[in-house]
Amino acid sequence: MSLTGALNAAVASLRVNQASISVLSANIAHVNDPNYTKKTLNRESIVLGDSQVGSVAVAGYSTAVSENLRKQMETLIAGSGTSGAQNELMSRVQQLLGTSTDQAALPSLLSQFTAAWQTLQATPESKSAQTAVIRYGQQLTEEVNRVAAGIDSLDSEVKDETTQSVDALNGLLEQVFELNVRLRSASENGAERADLIDQRDNLVRQVAQYVDVRTVERENGAIALFTPAGLSLVDGPPSNFTFDGTNIFRAEDPKTPIESLFREGKIRALVDFRLDNSSKAVPVSTDPATEVLRKLRSQLDQVAKAMTSTTGSTFSSAYDAAGQSLRVVMSFQTTVAAQPASPQYTTVGLTGDLRPGDVFEIDINGRTFSYTAQANDATLDAIAGKLAGLINGDTTLGVTAVAGAGAIQLSGTANDTPYSVKTLANGEPPELKSGFFIGSDRFTFAVNESLLDGTQQLKKNSASDVVTALNSTDRTFVAAGLTVSGVSYKGMMINIVGTSVANAKSIADQAKFDSESLKQTEQRYQADVGVNLDEELANLQVLQNAYAASARLLTVVQQLFDTLQAAVSR
Image (cartoon, rainbow, N blue to C red; front, side, top):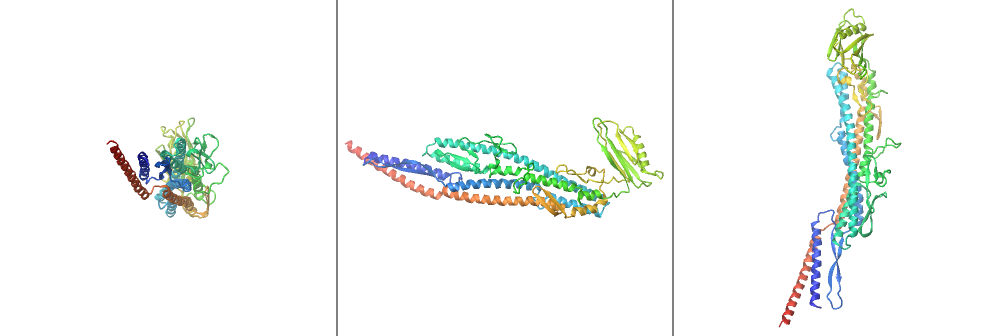
């Protein structure tokens, strides 16, 4: 064995040790990095020939691999991406409905509305009781309007979030493609290749958060990505996806929706949440996280219809059927709004039992005209004539009056010029004959404007029948995603909120289960491919010993060279 051979062997050993320490240092530096897999230096023996000292060299680098756990984790990431997004969306629905508190707004307001009618039933002459009925009725309609607007706002937010998620998916797929290109050109035994594989696997896990993904190995370390339904994500150049606000398309085929080929992941959850098949002959989905907005819209529309319907023993039919309680009344019969080519027309009717001393007042544009019935005023026709004369006596009013049979017709003197009218008989405004609630859907549902502005008041005689109708439990409520029977109006509200709460709870439980399953699998995966600090410290001790041996060999060779040089120089 030559001294030169021994020297080369020692130097080669030191080089391998240096490379091993570099790998070990990288492992320790990433001990808590979930996107890093443990690296190992591969060595190979070098035989120089007979009577020659052998040596060692770096053969390459290997990465810890657990294919089964990796694929299982990618599947669980997609599932957790679905249920996690669903859980977040349903939490926003609960906040909108006010179910984060002990009592949701809709059933609570219905209870207050009913209680106000019960108070009016007990004290029909009470002005404050009437005011409370109108106030709680208005709050109920405003809550329906608020939730309806909130649903549309949430719809817009989720639509934007879907666009952002599709864009994020496109960006990730482009990065996977770029890594595939780099992997093909990377040295098969180089350290860079192992790092690129880690980056690639991390990107695949990020893709799995948006869509369910399956990987297929290609040549030179590259991979292809597909959904389990067979949709290509990356196989060569990456697919590019677009979202038109309803459907998702591939850029290569902009006419064929492909969202059904995304079966898991955040994007699927977002699309399902906004899904609306109401225009198709398709039954509403029974899945608690699908067509959520469609169901809520339908249910709110049915609330408005249930409160305004006059079919059967409903709230509105009970109110409308009640008789007037006032002895004599002056009320509106007709109003035609002013137009650019025509003036406003209004008809005021007088009905009831006229008696001397009855006081009639009509307010037009803030000016009050009053007449007190005399003993010789035998009919309401005469009262109409007296009031018409008073009105026409004011030539600056901009309104003329014509008396008729128990009525006064008011006409504006200018086109497109509205005027206001308010009437009182013995200090009492007329009672609203019908239509406490107006509107036919969640947006137009409202309390009659004449009650809000005080031009009309509630029918006192209606309270008893209205309370009975409100408390009746013989109602059937049919809307998208909810059908209940044998309930009261409050029960209808409770079922809307309760169904939403139950659906949210079901989804939250699934999200928790998926998250725990993913966490356990991640822990198992890290135990297999992650860095074990104790193991790396033990490897460091081995490398220290190997380094010391190589250094000792270099020292011995140096001493031999010195001895040889001294002998030759004599």
